[in-house]
Image 1 (cartoon, rainbow, N blue to C red):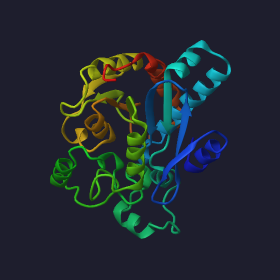
Image 2: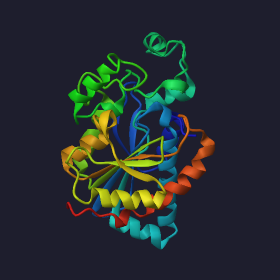
Image 3: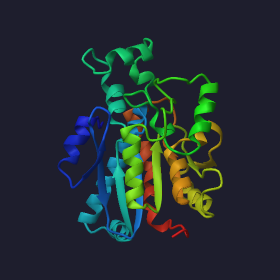
Length: 288
């Protein structure tokens, strides 16, 4: 399993970029495959409890690299058509807290201990280390999201759902948004962990073919396709990307069960997700 240190050790042996740092100054890494004209961003572990999504992306990254090196026609075509950017761990501080727990030496020890109220991080922690849920921290219906959350009792920083004081208030969400603005991606896929469902769209901003492309991706994985509604359709990366660029952004919820999903689920998750990832080169929106 990739904790941050293992990810760092692995990435440092590979060509990579650093797109920013977390609150605790851990690097946010980007790995790239392919040199095609269509650029797609794949990113994972917005939430501390969803570290298994890092495993999914890293497994696909290495399969791509090995396939290209071995001259596999499938991967050579993918690399010729696409540039795939991987950000495998958006929230390294949250992942580390979930995997390794809260020690007395932690710089946020007293704040976190009070918020946890006796619970273990591995039971509840979704947020970054400043207790902001990164996937509610984007500029897509932010004030509406904040009001709905406050009505549900989410009024202060905590383990999950608190959206922060303003959009992109956190270095992690800002780094991912800034990367997206700089690279002008044609499509993005945000990997989360719960439900075997793909969400698409934000209000009326998605391009006309977003549903059709999403259905092809969902069919390839054996997942369902849904248009998110209510609180889950506000403030997320997918929502912001769809609104800001009018292009196809998807949230891919892998696996079923209780987060954090066990490592024993990884093979089954990857078996389902792999065909979806391999067909990305065929999914070209008419928006550009």
